[in-house]
Structure formats: C-alpha cells, structure tokens
Length: 404
Image (cartoon, rainbow, N blue to C red):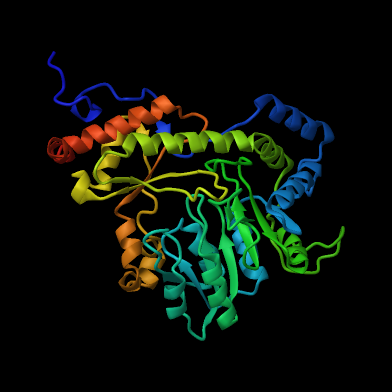
C-alpha cells in the first residue's frame, strides 16, 4: 500500500479524530451535583411553575449581571419574542443580517418586518452609522446582537436610539458573563436576552433569560411568560407559555458552579489556536479585548483565500474529512434565508460587509471536550492544507465529481 500524497484524510490518511469533534458540544459541569438537584426536583414534585431552582437561577443571574430583574424562560427565542412585544416594537425594526436567523424570526413571527443592516468589518456587529441611515417613520426599534463573546458598540447604538426615540434591546445569546468598559452585558438598552441552549458554553439544557433594570417591564414579561396569569385564576394580560422547568434551572445552577472552569478552558484553547495558527498565511483568529471579561465561547477564524490558498468553504471540507465539524457562521446571512429572501430580494445591496464575512468566517471546536493536543492537531490540518493548497483544491474538485 502506498502512502498518501499528504497526511490528510482527504488523501486517504486516517482521520485526525476517530469521533466527530463538534462546535458547541455541551459542557456538563459536576454531574453528581446535577443529579442531586434533579433528584431533589423529583422528590419535591415541583417540576415547573416558578419553582425554587428557577427562583435561585434568576437570583444568581441578577447578581452576576448587576440588574434589578431577571425573567428566565424555556429558551432564548421565546425570551426575545416576549421582550419584543413587551417594549412595544411594531412595523419595522433594524437588525443585523449577520446573526442566527432566530433574531429575525422573533420579529417576523409577530408580523414585524426586520430591516437588515450591515455590520462593521472589524467587530462583525451592527454599525451605528449604517443603522441611522436606515431609520424611517416606520422604524420602532433596534436589536443589537453581541457576537462571539464580544460586545456591540453599545454607546453608538444608544446614541442613535435616543436621537430617534427608538426602543433598543440586545440579543446577547453569545455574551453571557461578558463586559464592555467594565459593565456587564445584560445591563445595556431597555433589556437584553441570553440563551442557555445546550451548545452555549453555559447551558441549562434549553433555556433563556431576559434581564433589565426596568422592574415594570419585567413584571409585564412575567405575565406574558405564564399565559397572563396574576394569581390562581386571574388572567390580566395576553400571554404564552415561556416558563423554564425546574430540571433546566437545575442544569443552569450546575453550569454556574463550573462557569469559571468553562471560561478558563475556552481561554486556554483560544490562546492555543492563536499560537498554533499565527504563522499560517491568510488565517486570522479573532481576538478578544484583554481588559474586558469574555466567555471565549467561540474560536472564530477569518480566512483570506488569496493568502491562504484555499477558501473558507474548502477548508471546512478538509476539516470535515478529519472529523472536525467546523461551522460556517453565519452562512448565508439571514437576508438570504426564507422568508426574507422572497420578501426582501434587494436587501443584499446594502449588506456588502455581511456578504463578504459570510464567505470567510468559520468557528472551530472548543470547550471541555477539546484538549490543547486536539487544538494543535486541528491547526496542523489547516496548516498542511494551506501549504499544499493546489493539491488540496484539485483533490476537492475531483471528489466533488464522485457519487456520495
């Protein structure tokens, strides 16, 4: 048997990993402590409806963020939908297209039109100047999205919102336990929404939370989360079922116990990726501000095809052959997904940076299940593929013609 042309699975070498290595594989924390809490839930038979673990979870979130109110929910999307309705958004709301589609869906679900805005090339987040250009008499609000464990230009967005009398809220699904200018995410705008989905560094199986200093707003959202009930039989407001069950709160509290460890592992892996990929042309690992708190939740790589020799999509295919399931965040932009692609076919004309980033950015595995040795192996795959780009591209083209 002849040896492969290159030590890559694409050329017949054994994959770098026997089992698939995912982006966002769940962190678990202290399994024994989690099971104790779950047993306690079962013993109490208080499985949902604002149980003691939900109340404790809300308290710990409030204390971390430094706000007066926290309303936990069954997931982050429901939290965003409730908040959008509670602050009175209507007609049109400005959002980035470079985000997970749930940000737009939370508006469209309520028949509010998302107006897609471009992002800053350096931060990948909303550009306040572009936001202001899109404001019309129909604009009722702005939704900023913090990305990757970094934070929006909150001062710039707040200034725009104040000048035009607009509601400003944040989708902070990526930014739990992060800060800007020493102030914790969760304390900006009218309110902010966290996600504790299983793929987040800090999870509650499924879950979300809305945090705010506006206690009147929080009380309205508590009603909306529970069918509008105030008391046993008294419905005073239209509502839905957005309650978090006790077992999810138990997982959230277990994540709280291990949060510092999760962040330390993420930071270690991020630094290892940065060091291992530093000399690979065209491969840039997105950095985090050294003077701020971050969760280091995502290892984000920008691929400059001209220098790397391969495109982002080609590198993703190389990595997939090695059982490294890199993700193309966010591809395509939300404006190219349905129903927005049909409703707003010209949206891309004002989104050049979004469309550029959507061809360049990928995220790599990190978290508790990824070791420094794993990181170095992934980096070697990327470096080898880029160093032999012509051979790799030819092999990918050939494999593309073969039946699956």
